[in-house]
Image (cartoon, rainbow, N blue to C red; front, side):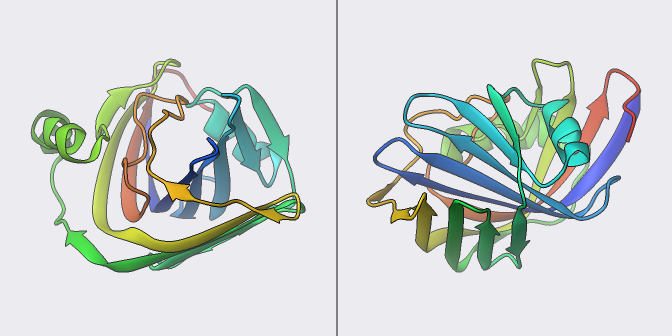
Length: 196
C-alpha cells in the first residue's frame, strides 16, 4: 500500500449556466509540480484537463472522469490568485481576505473530528475513499473565499458566478459550496502499487 502526500492549492469557481471548475496547482508531489483542471459541464460531463499523460494517469487513478484531455496547460496559484490557461480556456480567480488558518493536525483528527464539521459547514468531506479504493485525507491550511473571477471559454466570457449547487461528482468530496482558494495538504493511500 503506497501512501504519499501532495501540497498545493485547490481553487473553485462555478457559474449559473452549470459550468463548474476546480483547478489544482500542486507545488509538491511524487511527479513534481503540476496543475490540472476538473471541469463539470452544463450537460453533466466530467472532464479532466491535464498538461501531460503522467498527470492524467495520476489524477484519473484516483478520480472518475468521462473524458480526459491532454492539452498545453499552464497553472499558477499563490493562495490569493489562481490562473489556468489552455488554448480555449482562460481562468483567473482572485480571493479576498484569509477566511481561516488551521494548524497541523493528525490524520485521525481529520477523519473523525474535522470531517463531520467540514461537511456541515462548508459542504466538503475531508476524509473518504474514492470509487477506485484510494483513501484520502484533505487538510486545509488556509483559505480565501473568491471575491472575483473570470472564465473565458472558446472566446466568450461566462457570466453570473454562482455557488456549487450541482455536484462535480468525480470523487467522494465536492468543493466548498461557496467558491474558494484553499491551500491544502492531501495524504493519499493507494490500495495498489502505483507506478509514478
